[in-house]
Image: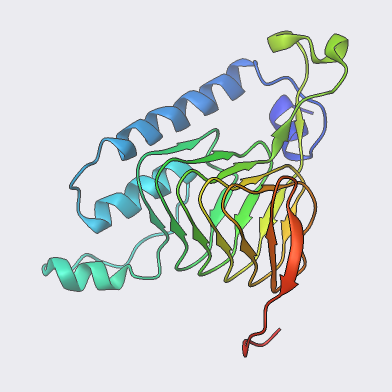
Length: 208
């Protein structure tokens, strides 16, 4: 089994092999291009985000009118620069997701964000982690591991939220600014703090 296959399975793996170094380098360059895009039109930004995440799904044919063309892409995720992503191919954003500036995705394992979810500035999602034993951890010579992060549809993660590996945040949740999410949050609840704790249930007409 390759180190990449071990990584995707959440097993201990070596991150500093040529193929994984190349994968991170490719993603870093793709992020740099996206972050320097400045006043690029909406279609170009969507294409550049797809390059970061290695999403090969084709876009609808381009229209001559810029506003009409942007309307064609209204369901595509909206990501504000700058953004930092480790590999890219493990980040899956649903329709209508908004990612504000300075967000970070450590996508050792899949990071899945449901449709219409909103991220405030400087949200960090970590699906990668390291062994606690320093003898095993051993700097860049030792192994790493990870667990998937799943964030449901219709959530709002306010600014500076951090989500740790293996966490599931249920649909319709709100996570207060500055929170560190260390445990799963059930659907339609508000959670806040470090570590984040459930504060109350959200009353909603949305189908649960």
